[in-house]
Image 1: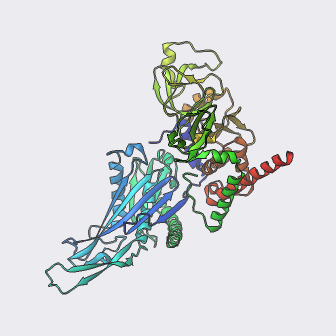
Image 2: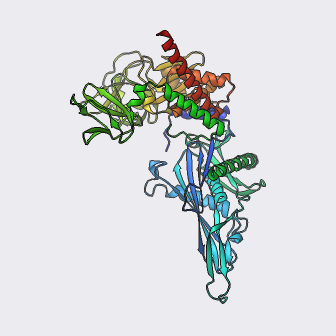
Image 3: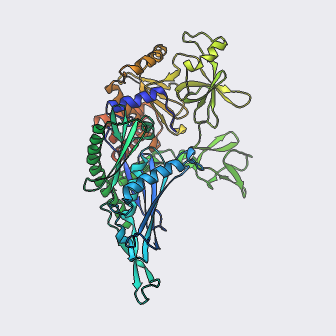
Length: 286
Length: 319
């Protein structure tokens, strides 16, 4: 946990009040974003995202599996987040379990849609190989390398980048076998199918400090928050998920205000992320 | 350059590389020869039997470095001073630290040393400069002076027999720091100077360069009024909060970002260089936040390379 004296806390609160934060940012400004793709060669897709002092690595691993009986026409996606003790000493051992679970659940809500798979950011029916028999299981893992606030936004951005980097091997199914037998599949080493990541949302967290709210809070600023609302918005400006943290209550009108701000900010962030992804892919191709 | 992650475009990368190469070439030959990495051979004169110090090892008759850093020679002793290391205190250093614990008659401070520093209650003078009397009441009121997490500034008094580090704060200028921000940089970037407290009159800002790499940038406090402001604190928190004036805050943030940029580039932090960097950003209309962007890093590196080149030329011209 960050240690701050009364004087420093006062200074941070004053900065947010006066719309000039400790590093000179305005209330609705992000820190510097840097994106790298293909950092883990063994994974199908991976990314490293740095947002100021926060650093995240995500990997996407695809495995062939069996679809569930309830949804024979859909693949499966699971998201796990782990916080490395390098980020903070308190994450050592079981110390990070609570935070990791909280982040995982928030991301699952925002990206995986409902129980039936409807409204998911990733089109689950595109993961099917043979209906009822074979499908792709996607394992999305996030690792927090260093933590300086705003983990959820950074994780969501990193997952978006990793998914855009992901290539699923092309599968050839031999249809000779009888219908109740396991079909034989031949996984190609050369041909890969790219994902459609245009519907993957970004998450914008608005942290309320005093009377105002800020985006991309550092851990010092987060220690001063009364409540935080995370809004996940997709490319069309639609809200895909909403979570609130912190004990203090919020007036409904404030929440509506926050949502409209998040919507506005998300479109800027999305285009920034897109250009960073394009730059990172161009660099990886070199 | 550790921890410098910038998204540079092609031209910026070339410019930064040129600036850094120029800086490298400007460094005196002796300085670049003194820098070693692990497994580098340290040239020594084998005749005068030297003493191998910290970070060196004897390998087949050669002295080899086991750490990355700068080779230091003191008479016969040869050792490696690492750059990415904790602070090594010397008596009389002015440091900035954070209170982590209140123990009987003392505060424990985090100062980026290998152990916690100790500030005894008896090493604090009363506001009017009189020495404290050791009373139980005084001891019970220690939280009235500093509480946990307070940032304070003090002087290194010395080491005790058991190896613990003691501090003192016997003058008005030492004590609690409020209304500002604390930055941490690698300690080797702050050199010991005559002056570590800087009141930047033009900005109404206090800049304290702690020898331990803790740097305080805050609103100027008039010496002697410190005790009064702490008393006001309780009152003001309930009232409308009296924040730092906007103009002063802008200067604080600008100076703080200048420190961040310079330390990320690995330039020695002097008050002149910090002010110069902040001024340069202001005069070229760089927004305070944009100082942490790639372009300003490159500009700062180029400016420093030019400054050092000019300095060298002047020196050679004078000869």
